[in-house]
Image (cartoon, rainbow, N blue to C red; front, top):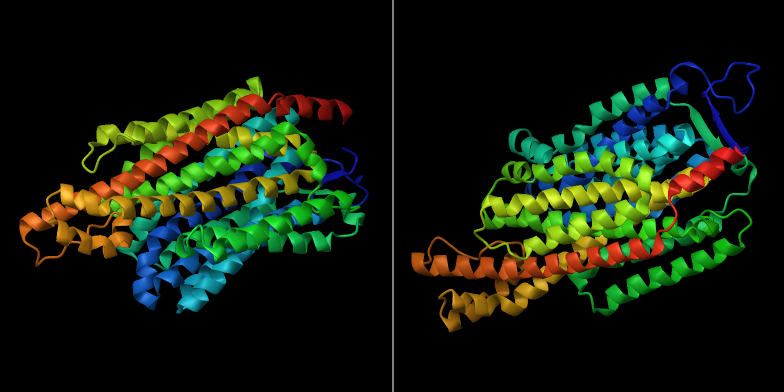
Length: 536
């Protein structure tokens, strides 16, 4: 690895370039702790906003479309810049761009709380997403550079655990803050975390970069093509539910994005110094790990979305109560991430990737038995299976992607992993919500009639499809008790029909991911790292 430089930000005069510094900057575990702060902040922020959105809407007079952009502006900026953030870190210093990302993300979080208008919130959410894109890929890039090859898998397991826990804690933390403080506090909480991350990171992080890349011409056309392609595709995905998945606008946006991304891939094979080296995809474990990462978060975020609707709108739990009931998922993920890392290190991702996807498939198949009145004893086992599966896949797929990339491309590989994660999550939420809505629309009238609502009256409730798709029964206080009970029963059953359809699609995708991993992943990252260690 002659082109990889690892050094203190301000090495002593006369110290040889590329030498490992002494003291705290030589300790890779301190590097892991430092990047965990930034990773925790981004993970927490990604899942608390959904809890704050209703209160943001009431306080700022925002429309539903405005609230969608509170999420979408962040997602678009994040997805478009992740690989760029990793490349900048590889080229100019991963520590530098990690610190810039933490500082910018923290400042943007405070600005969101102070904005005072929905337009300001949306704008600063986009800024927050951009700085998150500088932060996230360089966490994995630094770990790849500082950990010895045989310990990298364990580091990734802990990294995955922090990411999973922060995402799962979001609804609980967000619910507590919104209920007892205000919606602005959901963003202000990033300030103390960010300051602590900056202070600790400045003290312990070494500078790592690909010294050869710093002398190369920067691939500006590749940056532009990748950003346009990802923006168009993700925009089509997040608007698919609103526009309709078969509409010309949705298909046009997604199709244009895919076309530009194909052009980007063609251009990168001919660029002298590409933004994303296409040679990385010659490794089947890395390529399949990227696909499995997207599937993993498609299932995780899509399932969490409809589970939270079910717990809050059908079962009547508050956001905090619903978050507490999903704690088995969080705790299982805490166990599974380091366990998956240990198993991956010993047996390779060919074992842990399929095992994790199989656990997710089992969880989703069990959800097919849920009803509007299921006891908690029917809910927590699939939560545990899902958490175990997600944690195991996250550790093994991250190791497969970043562990199979050359260390000098660690930041780019981290950006690739994070991009797959974001696109998968966006697809999961959008596609499953659309699927639930479609199923509710086709079964609502029949379910209301079966529950005892007169046929003529049942047809009149068709206009309430959107509310029912969120688990909300269209009842009012002036309805007779018998009619209100029938409408609630029929509406909730129609929603459960949608949940079952979403769970079935998720289960099938998990099975496909399992088979793909079994068939395509044949070489453990450890083998590649052993060769690298021998060469270095």
